[in-house]
Length: 240
Length: 295
Image (cartoon, rainbow over all chains, first blue to last red; front, side):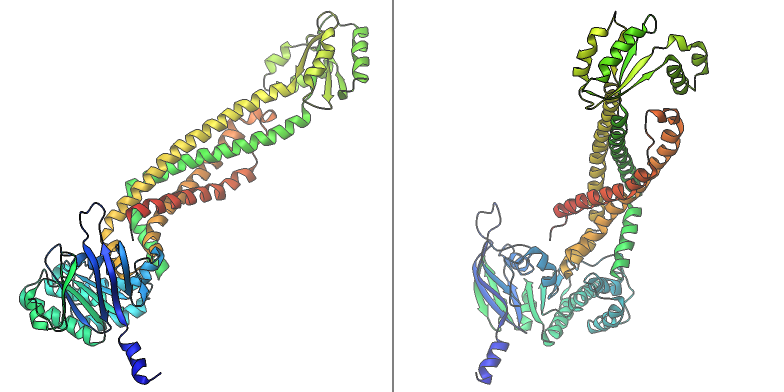
């Protein structure tokens, strides 16, 4: 086997693959996702765009295995997610970092403690946290603000804490669901720079958004969903 | 560190909702006390059955007056060759009086008033098969009345009555234990749901970052287990006090009838009740969480 084909196997094995995925919620008239196939390779930066109710959030929930597909296969990090046994889910989720529009920080813990909490509950020691957490807070640009509580931080800073928490365990995938939805344009751009920097470390970034400015500025792959179907998949797209 | 985390979460959880925690412990304690009492009664009845069946006799009471020696001889001759009889003894009026004085030692007025002559003589018969009383009674029925026998009494029937009273006490204790147990479990479910609700943010984050299910659920379940264990300890303490002040205290004069409750049995209740309390509350807690904290 030639080197080229080996490289091919290593580099182009998709880190996320949806194969003919359909999701119909119970009692729903029509499917939220209808026969969707998409594949994302390691190190990519992908935007999922589309109007409200297009099926973007369903996609996020499927990737996190919060819900199961009605039909089709979902493969993340070489693992079939759809029929995964529930006791395997926690370990699976450790390979995905998550950021949300509403930050989801613990209000009674400092920035440091919020990030350290994510490590401690998956069994890392405090010694590990003491070494890794300041590092990642520095990376997201919060050096010196470790001991602030969320309500003492701006929206952008809170989202940075959330990014730090998502990234501290060095996941293979960073899943961002409308991460700039609650932020003003300037702050949004800072968060995007941060996600870009994280992407450059080799982390695959999947971002769900309907922020056209950001999509247009970043010029990354754009997958547009409408009515549960993929209507566009462009390598260096704009919001359109 | 994980253990420390879990334990501190348990302590905080119990303290956060302290009135509910206390209610949970009290109902647990009452339920477990009655469960323990029920088990003790059950053991006691079984033990007493062994002791008494070993000793039970059939007593042929002769008429206190006007029983002739020849009548006694006839009955004794019958007993001697009766295949149902294992052994028999004749109890004179003096022996009956001695026994009477012993039984009623705590009532000297009664023993002073009673004279040996007013007590009946009797044959104390041990049957080969204690259940053959009816056949035995049939045979000697002909002597009842004019021929010297007053009554034929089966002690087994008397002790059975005592056992059936103890048995219904045991059933009653068990029923109350179950009803209280159900109340305790409802409190466990409620407490756990309140705890899970008050920590919903933490739980959401833990699920998000991939904390294992047991790690998420352990603090809640252990809260219930801790309440169960403390309830069991209180229940055990109550049983110990009951042993000291009731069985060995107030009921002491009845030791001739009620065989004493051994300390070993009482102490055995601690692991038993702790096990039952911990198991039931952890299973309940775990189930309550299944419905509350979905993966």
